[in-house]
Length: 123
Length: 336
Image (cartoon, rainbow over all chains, first blue to last red; front, side, top):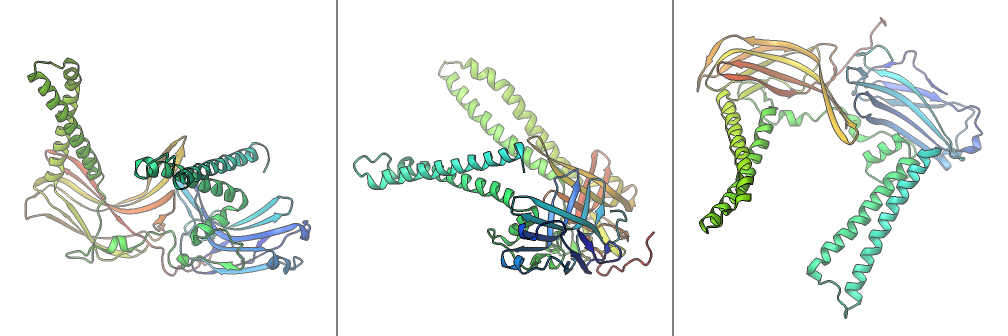
């Protein structure tokens, strides 16, 4: 589960985004790695592009030190561009994405979309 | 990760691993024969040795790049690969916060230096021009030159044989359509060239770059040449561009999402030394999207000059500009 701590899913360019995530119903010992990222992606007619603004990978010792009973909080400043956009051929959307890699090869992924800027109003 | 997807990825990785091994194996055989077997000397060092070695090594390089590309696609997430691509290193487990340095300023917006490297005569910057006809003219010129040169060689060969009393009928039959194409391509090239010369160049100068939504800017358009203009119009345009694969083709689609006329001028005569000058002020809309560029998608802003002239075909010339997001956008007070 990912929860953005902001009251509304809209952030202004350069503003800090604060969010937290936690994992439930998964054996803690089976988690091999966790990746958390703040990224933008394009959708539409063209081939999809992905831009990663923030990336954190936890594995090995850094993963073992984590207490999964409490939510993991992350804060990072957003860039001034690209702004969220809904055009005719392409759409630019931002999201927080968390991936859990388990030791049986399973990959769990969750993402939470949000806006950067006020050019578009609907997620 | 099951079924055909798994088999496909495994098969691709195995194929490239096999290509890599074949390349290494053949390179090793070639080098060992060359260096260790002095008596047989299968290849002279300058006679094909480097060619064979190059082919073998290219197998090894294609194999290793293809293999690791497939493996990374399976073992790393999309985001991790993107970060690796930005950092330019091979996958080390990353820990802690990773914010790419280049995203500090204005990521995914083209560099403004490309637009501001040419100072203007009256205003601060002269915009780079983007004239599609110029590319077509160069391509047509290269084709016409190459085709005419080839036909000229065949004509000389045919003439030589003719004067030796051996009329080369087959060559003459082939030359007839060839000469027709040569004449048509040369004619088309010079017609296009005269059109570009006759209409004359267009320059656009602007007082400031990059542009910011909501602000007003001063622009000057100068049309050179010797012609009678029926109408000339200047537009601010925003165009979305998407590139995608369609089968084995790579296609690009463009769509204009914003177009606003910012200046126009009616019938007028332009002469050498007396160009037409159009000055205007324009404003980028407050809610405009900024310029954007990623691998397969883009949003371009440009100044477009459309002209209609007597005795010449209509023309349209584009001058790209850069739009940045507003530096300090304030959070809206109430959601609509």
